[in-house]
Image (tube, rainbow, N blue to C red; front, side, top):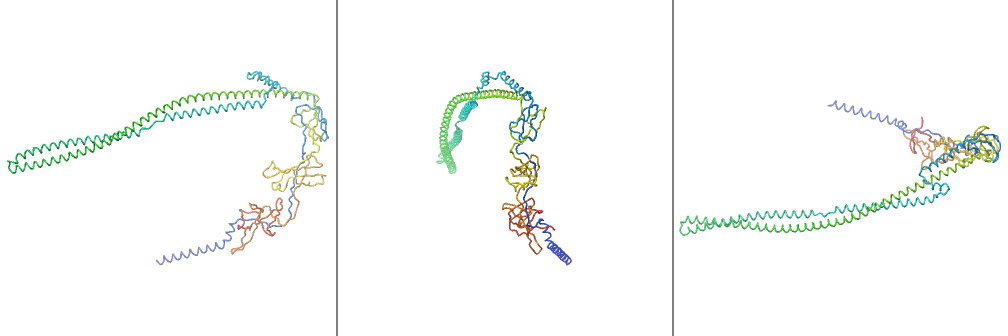
Length: 574
């Protein structure tokens, strides 16, 4: 027993030593353990310096508004009257065209013949009223306003007829519902019949009971009669021996007489009780008979009322059937009117569509005739002239070559029109520029009297989510196609407090930075993130000048392994 206690004490001592050792190790390394659980933050010291917020970019000069000289038909070029770089005035000849029927003229004639043939087929189809066609050809077309009035009137008539049909249909349904309800109306006399049957049953039961009691009374009367006969016989026997018989005979006769008297008394008592029972049964039977008679009266009244109600219901149904016949007739008339108005509306719509179709076909023919006439006029002695004053920047055809519709035969730089230049910047850079800001030309000594300003800031089509396209208006001695390098934005300036852009943070309360503050503790130094609200004065691609409660020697947090909030403990890189 002592050995077991000794072993237990040694085990407790060993466990206590192990526990204290573990706590000592954890206490010693607690600072290191906690540091590894904190987010690691990279920092950079606040400094003074220069911020240059200019934005630079290179673009190609484009003409602000070039004029394309085009020929709307395919024609062969006879000669070119101008050269590239030549000044031209409005109306000057650019090209001479050969006399010929162009492909466009031939195509226009074919189109005219096709339109005429289609119109003729329409007339021969039998669906077109020739008088209508003749009226349309003479230009006597019903105006759109008149058609709109006719169509509105037809639609209104159709709507009114439809509403009338709905109303008559609803009336038919209402009468049918009334007939259904009236046919089902019947006075319920089952309760009265049940009450009468119950009263009759009770009466029959009491009557049977009274018969049984009367039978009992009859039997009791027979017993009385028999007892009286035995009494009379006993009296006679007693009278015969009372004067001359011996004492025993007289005594025996007296006892028989007395016994007979008792039997008579008992029989009379039973008869009286039976009579009383019969009387009571008869009284109860009278009560039941009155109840049965009363129930019979109530039942007869209910039957009369039910018959009267049925007669009244039949009269109502008969009247409703007459109303229903009238309502169904009116509904049939209304539905016929709806059909007629619908047909009239469809006929009017078809008539309008047909006339509009004819009008469109004739108008197409007239227009095509004008096109053919104009192309025929251009087929002889045709020239292409300048529509604006300016400089011919390019000639795109040579003699003998055919023109192509939609393809410019020459390009003119209109006189007095400016130039533009565009390049892309990041969204952050674009925030530092506004429409109207002037721009400077890098290496401006190569150019004279050149000015530039921002005229638009739009999303870059190649990367609209991350970049903006700056467009500048240029004036001066320029030519389209030149490459220029421009800078735009504020000039360089010195600032006392400059931090990396990555250190600037923002929430609902404004912009701020997180600085690192050192705090001493029994287990060593601790580092805490502290918020300082700032105002951004200027910024470039990498850094920003700020104003706030900073001395200029603080370390600001730029990046971290985990999100950091103000007041949170952090660790710095080893």
